Image (cartoon, rainbow, N blue to C red):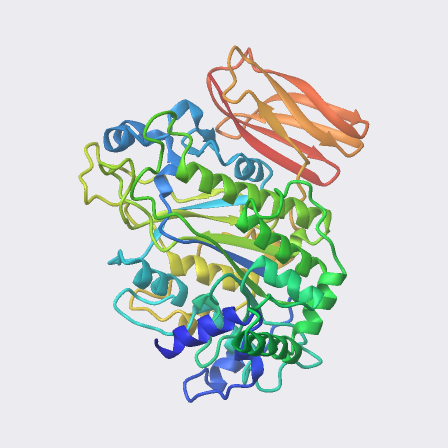
Length: 528
């Protein structure tokens, strides 16, 4: 077992890790010059939530390239989602039908999709690929620290010596899961604390420990667990934050049914309770779908991968709803990632093998609600070794998030994410108005949707929750020209359903835009 693995697994096993008890800083670290570039601990209440989809997620089954369906069916007809069942984001791109929650977030300007994210010369080993993604290294370079850990190390020099203190009383990062994510591993010490499981979190709040065997060794284990909890410097801050907030969303499934949802409930509670932790890392496993990604018989919209994507969608949608109800939605941005995607062509076991690039999601009220990049171009007759081609280096997404969300200067980003291919191009995953302060974070119209979509026979229904006031609904064509003013009057507060008549318009793609007292949403509508 190497030192890093020992530090990571020890931290998670103890609920709140011994890593925070004062280990000395080694010689390798950020220079004083680099610290000056960052300006020290930048004052911000922004929170970044990272969600790792462990195992290698099949991006072609999650974000569906509707303009590539002939090639997709040639490559994977026995596992592909039928095109009519895609949840359309645009006329060209859709989501797996299990991801209705993510579709609603996109419709309400709270979801961005980044296409074909990876890195040059990909590695198809779970362990090495995970190291590359969490460290932010080139594929032929080994870095033992994590990209977010290096960022935090530059912001909080000397950690853990002298921490917590009056200016920084809270954990810098929190990782929920069986090991501390390498994302927050610093150059010499992990910059975060671990909560081994959701049950461990509630035991921490209640001051209890796991039951141990009624043996001499069991008694010693109980004592050690109690000492760790009693001496953990951040326990009081976490307990206080959790005591100041309670989850409000009814969209969370019952505890134990969705582990990602259980983790995100903790994040929402701590953020709403005022904890100033900057980075949270959650995870969901099971994405290594070599066999029976879909059922041997029956619909391809069900099965292992559909269940996993449904859990991701359900958890993130409930989390966003909770943040809104707790009035902290504008503080939080989230991102999903997986160590790699899958091959274009399905294998003989109704599954997919390790691949290269794949899409990722960014979510929150402050994200740029768009699809970054284009659908991957697929060969008409993909072979067993064909991969989704790279469009975005994953470190470009990291750099853009750090630059816009945490105000990290470009010179510091170059040092945080060293590469022969850097500096990485900017990707506007955060809306510019949020960063420069010219516009507030986007407030969407609750429950806005158009159904059915695609619209057939020219008639559909608009649904939304009116706040009480003037409402305007406009329809624009693909060139941005207003083609219909559907509504332009005051409405009382409450649930509304209104007819949308498109019978006089030519088939094609339209944008339906709704605005009410500073809130707005839009949805792409396909007229057949």
